[in-house]
Amino acid sequence: MARTVDPEKHEARRMHILGAAGRCFARKGFDATTTADICAEAGVGSGTLFHYFGSKRRLLHALFELDEAEKAERAREALAAGDPLVGLWHVVDGLVADVRQREYLGLVNVVIQQSTRDPDLVALLERTDAAAREALATLIRRCSEAGAIDSGHDAAVTASWLQSLTDLLYIRLSGDESLDTDAELAVMRDVIARFLRLA
Image 1 (cartoon, rainbow, N blue to C red):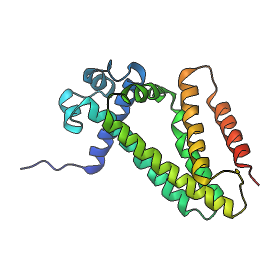
Image 2: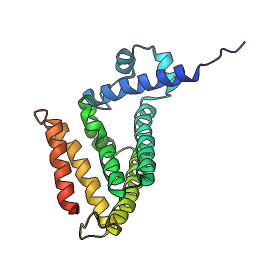
Image 3: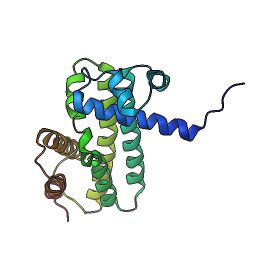
Image 4: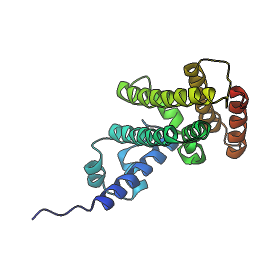
C-alpha cells in the first residue's frame, strides 16, 4: 500500500532544505558547496535531498523560482491597491525584503558567478526582473496620472532605475558587513523619493 504524503509536511521539508541550501551557497559559493554540506545544514540524508531536488543546480534554481513567485504575488497585490503610490512602495519594499536576512546576502556573488555559465538561471532572473519592471512602470504611470509623482522621465526608464537602485542595495550590503541595514534602507527610500519628486 502506497504511503500517504502530507502536502503541508512535504512543503515544509522542501522549504527547510531550500533554506539550508541558500545559507550554504551564500557562505561558500555555489561551486564550493557540496550536497553533503547542504544535507548537514538541513539535517537530512542525501536520499531525502535528492528526493526533493534532483541536483545541486536544481536547488539553486528552486531558490530563485521561489523568489520569482513571491515577487509576482507582491506585484499582484500592489497593482490591486487603491492607491498607486502605496502599491509602488509595496513593490519596492518587496524587491529589497531579503536584505534583512544577511546570511543570504552572499547569494549576490553566486548570481554574479553563475550568470556566465548557467543560461537557464539567467533566463529565470531576467524573467523575474522583467515582471517587476513591468509592475513598477504601470504603478509609476498611475502615480504620474494621479499627480503623486513627477520623475520627469518615461515610466519604463524610471522603473528600470528604481530596480537598479534596489539591486545596488544588495551589492552594498553584501560587500560591507559594517553597514547598518536599516540606515541603508532609509537612504535608498530617500533617494527614490527624491528621484520620483513625490508631490
